[in-house]
Image 1 (cartoon, rainbow, N blue to C red):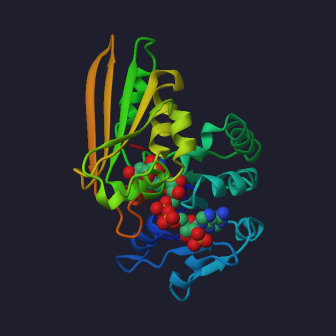
Image 2 (tube, rainbow, N blue to C red):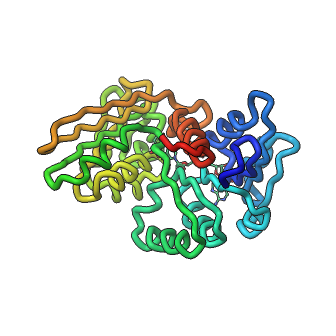
Length: 270
Ligand SMILES: NC(=O)C1=CN([C@@H]2O[C@H](COP(=O)(O)OP(=O)(O)OC[C@H]3O[C@@H](n4cnc5c(N)ncnc54)[C@H](OP(=O)(O)O)[C@@H]3O)[C@@H](O)[C@H]2O)C=CC1
Ligand SMILES: O=C([O-])CC(=O)C(=O)O
């Protein structure tokens, strides 16, 4: 990989939704013509949004056969579980957006083993937040505790609110949807709470408590972290613009994946 650059690399992209659209645009801007192979299901509605000239395959075997330099998953937790072991085992590095899939310890072990067998690495981007370097550092002290609150406009939790008798469009005050562990949050809200599990992986699963709030008074996807312990206190807050294509997803996520991709091809890693 050392001689390749992001401009000359062959990139496998799983999914073509809000994140992948933005990533594809970034990879193709400034006169670049990225070599991208998309994996979408044969009957995927997303196929009709794929620009002419972009190669599309329907199976993970076909994607692996192309031998991309790297694969980026931006399709969802179920897709990550289904496809990524084969990619890693084939020795192809992976950047995974749907980090909440790792809340399943069996899948975590399967992916780690596949990466070891393939002699490659699974990279987890910061996604819709930042500050994972700080969390990784304070993880070392047993006193560290993190309270993470995901606060999003009601449109991001339309189905969940309906299930408890609320109309997302008529909500007047905030609704606490969930309080508990990061693993439970990531599994209960697979399209909204991957960040919770990224935080937990960085700082330690036992150190994090999570609140999930639908709030009609916010217009941004807001991630608040309160960190406390013998090393000190920190407060981080991210107020992200939701993607126009998918309000659950912050636009920042595609930029984070782009930054993670760039790092893969740099000799000096920041
Ligand atoms: N780590 C982080 O901070 C964040 C992580 N995420 C993760 O990224 C994922 C993608 O986000 P986003 O782009 O907004 O989602 P979208 O719903 O906009 O797009 C998902 C895309 O993936 C495709 N897809 C879904 N399942 C499969 C499958 N089994 N095989 C192939 N393609 C599939 C969909 O195609 P189809 O048309 O067939 O449904 C669609 O093209 C989220 O589900 C979430 O897990 C999101 C935000 C932040
Ligand atoms: O994009 C966001 O704000 C967070 C998100 O959806 C997730 O963590 O799955």
